[in-house]
Structure formats: structure tokens, C-alpha cells
Image (cartoon, rainbow, N blue to C red; front, top):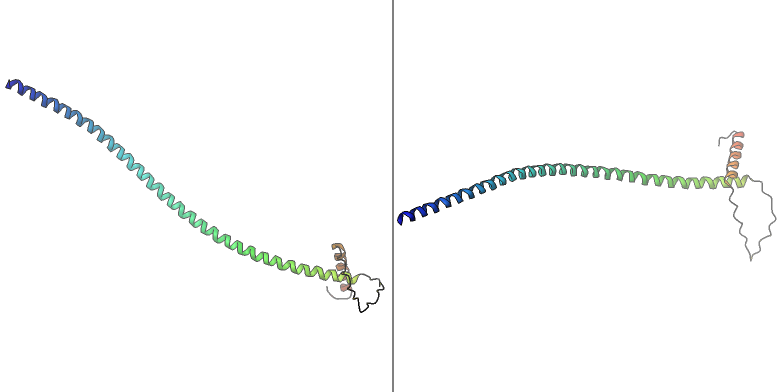
Length: 156
């Protein structure tokens, strides 16, 4: 019996060794797959690092562009404000010129005297404002005035 017990033990050890070898082969396959995944993971990480660097450079460029646009917009806004002030000033001057031309035309019109009643101490009459002439009448009066000034030898 000792002989058969030795064979059983030896057979059991051989079976266990075969199971161990099979398991080692399975682990070897898994390790190879893990190594392959590690290489692809390193490649993916390298691509992510490259993409991150490109994105950082693009963000830096965008910040620079925003700064330039902001400065340019500020300059244009200042210029627009100045131009608006100039236009407002010129419009005021144009109003004054139109008023002067209006006075000139009203002074150049032949006036027909109308008999006005004498004011009594109880009532004071306020003269009615002169009607505003049309643009053509103002232009014609200004033309006539300038021609009169030239014929007298004075430059208008």
C-alpha cells in the first residue's frame, strides 16, 4: 500500500503542477493584454498632453486678441464721442447761421406799415413773433444779400 500511496501522491502533485502551469499561462495572457493596454494608454495620455498644450496656446492667442479688440474698441469709442461733440457744436453753429439768415431775410423784405393802436397804460402789446420763412426764401434772401454786398465792393 505504501507503493500505491506514493503513486497517488505523485499523481496528485503532477495534476496540481499541470493546473499551476495552465493558470500561469492564463496570467501570462492577461499580463500581455495589460501591457498592450498600458502602451495605448500612454499614447492616449501623450495625445491629451499635446492637445492641452495646443489649447493653452490658443487660449493665450484669444486673450491677446481680446486685449487688442478692447483697446481698439476703446479708441473708437473715444473718437466717436469726440465726433459726436463736434457734430453737436456744428449743429449749434448751423442754428445760429440759420437764425442770422432768417433775420437778414426778414430785414430785406419790404415791410408795409400797419397802423397799430397806441398802447394804453393798462395794456401793453407784445409784438407778434416774425413768421419763420421757408428754406427757399432764406436762400434767395442770402443770395440777394451777397450780390448786393459784392456790387458795393465788399466781400461777403
